[in-house]
Image 1 (cartoon, rainbow, N blue to C red):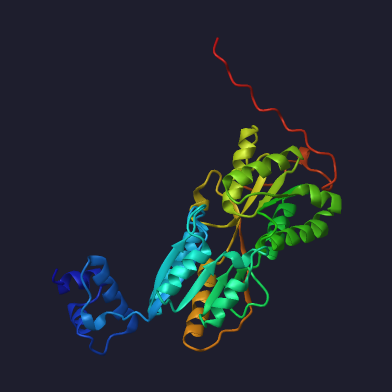
Image 2 (image 1 turned 90 degrees about the vertical axis):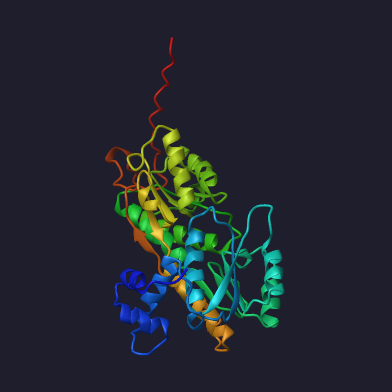
Length: 362
């Protein structure tokens, strides 16, 4: 389809003369204006002139655990966009239970002669996994970057959110609202981010709520990541009389809210819940979820820049970049009810009102 200058000019909000200069690759056009015209071409479905087509600098693999958790598509979107801006073509590899494994994806990517690989929450975060697989990639040599998770002894850049600080901030938020009996729900303890969250929880509860070792053991529940895991763990914590729960993911938090409602409780009236990630749509749940926001854009851009530097022969620091989380307060947390407040985590547990009986027709 032949491009009409008037349509492109209107879409890009520039003059037809400017569009002509861009399409003919002439000087005198600001970079942002040139990009606006090229974007208008893409939006309108016109093919870019051959002289303006950016040659791919190579393929880069992007391996993510799954797409069911909305935080992973959020990472993938920013990483793919940033790679494309650097001239690389991203290849998305998504794992599913019982499907292609991380190692199998890596073999496929190597067959396609990728220039590098970005791993998001991969086996590098699993302390039970053999990390020699990454050392073998580096020895090829193949540049790699890991997001969320750290493994010592691997000469590569790591990019993580500060999970320990995130949990401490969440606990501090609930303590400021009057909560003292606060529970933690997170995933299996073999994962580095989980270990850091548990450590942050223990430190904050000891410092801010006077929790004892016995309290900490009772108030921390490790479960499977996801809504179902959060629901099961929250049910156990609710029976122990918690007034607030800090969760290891937004999906776990949604499971905790479901568990509370199944018991006739309201959120945040009877139970305050804090998630983790601030994944898309959490502002529109019922109630809108208070959560710890991962700085996805900053983390993804930093990871891509480090990888591109490695690909271009400019070695990035082989250490971990920690990014500060942000507490986003919404409607799932509130001041603890005075009659339900407890002086300390080991104090008497609250008596929950029984859920209303179902009306049975005669």
